[in-house]
Length: 169
Image (cartoon, rainbow, N blue to C red; front, side, top):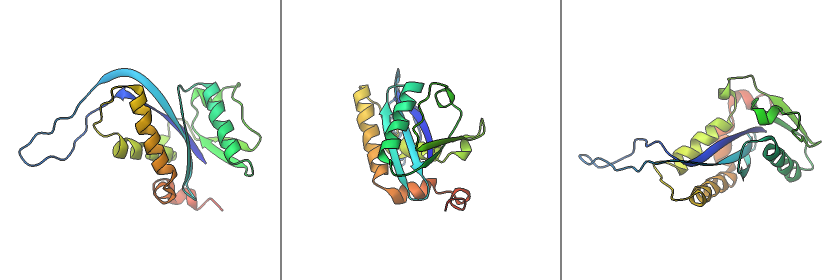
């Protein structure tokens, strides 16, 4: 499994969108510094995606995510590939017995297919949206994550890179 987390909140950057010729689209923009984090684990081979929405990116919340993955796959041994974020390398991180962590090299997000999953979420589920509360952000995030969790073919198409799949048996 590959793992990563991404911050979602009430700051948005307008992006291009379709409009009829001669009409300039109106896109809302806001800068409200409120955030939540989506933690995901992705299995590129079979397209399984597991996620949790947690309030921050600290060691205790990372431990909660790992424990949840451990329980969901209690009969499997998981090789979890992740970056070297501070909450991933802390001595206080609780790593369950059925999970082994391997870190990708520093400054190489292009090696983690979770980055593409987050691009998919932002592009398909959050384009040019303005939210009136963090509850609204989380509701949209839950919808996005549930949609992907129930679409293993889509997930494997995004995360199943050739160089990864040829090393999985």
